[in-house]
Image 1: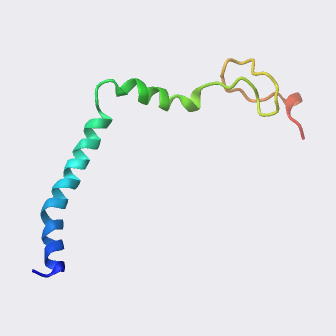
Image 2 (image 1 turned 120 degrees about the horizontal axis):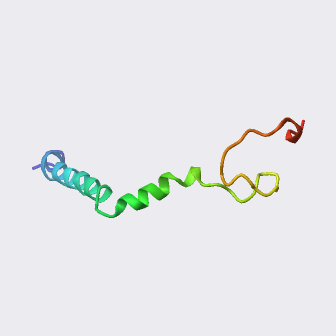
Image 3 (image 1 turned 90 degrees about the vertical axis):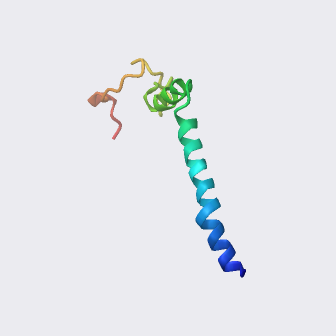
Amino acid sequence: MDTYSFLRQLADSWVLLMMFGFFVGVILWAFRPGSTKTYEEIANIPLKGNDTHPDGRPNTNDGKVTAPRKEQVND
């Protein structure tokens, strides 16, 4: 049996089964019990408030996004 035929048969059978098993494993790992809390924490990272503004002023709005007043805008 030449190399190409061997690799072709291997890819058509065992490698396909291994890829399917890997896919099922990833799906089971992603939806495992207890992972909901982890994924919710990760999803809320962009919504968490910062302690300071980019210019160094303290954040006093408890993480709420507000537009700056006209007198605060630096031209």
